[in-house]
Image 1 (spheres, one colour):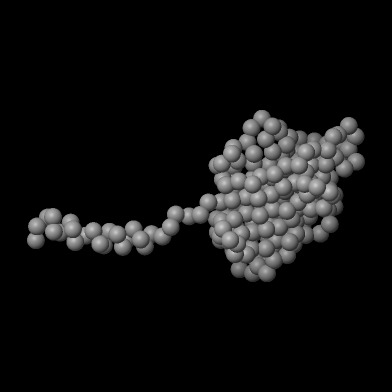
Image 2: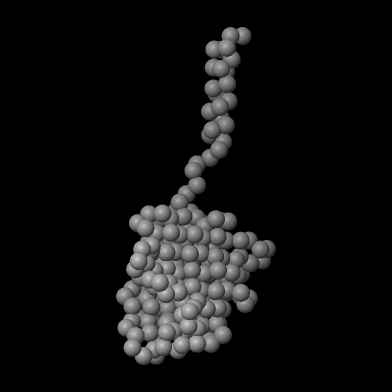
Length: 194
């Protein structure tokens, strides 16, 4: 058999192997909107609505999302950040919830919200906000979406402390939806682990 004929016979095998590799992974997408309000803080001005509707890496955005299947529950961690000097972001970590959907369960959930150089951080639960857990994370659900598997949910914080001054009540902030005083919604598509 000639070398040319041998290499030609390998071409169909190579094409089959390439086809078996599947499509490129779909991009990670984030869609979330919130507003930072002062609550009862003195000398504070409520923030403008913040929104991140982007694919990771586009428009100066950095997005990460991981879901871990732990048997009867999922554990969610995400970050969504608009980069720059006046950047902002929202992050959630260690948020365990039932596979059927619902509020956060367990005690290790943490919400972090950034505004410029300031970071606000506190514990979260599925219950109404409290001093011990100023953020409530609910309505978590993993589902098949149009653009791929997605996770959705809501977050509401009342008195989220500034990380560098956690006891300063005038530096605490609330995280609400972009309009009104209800919770902020989020949606991530194609998280790692789904």
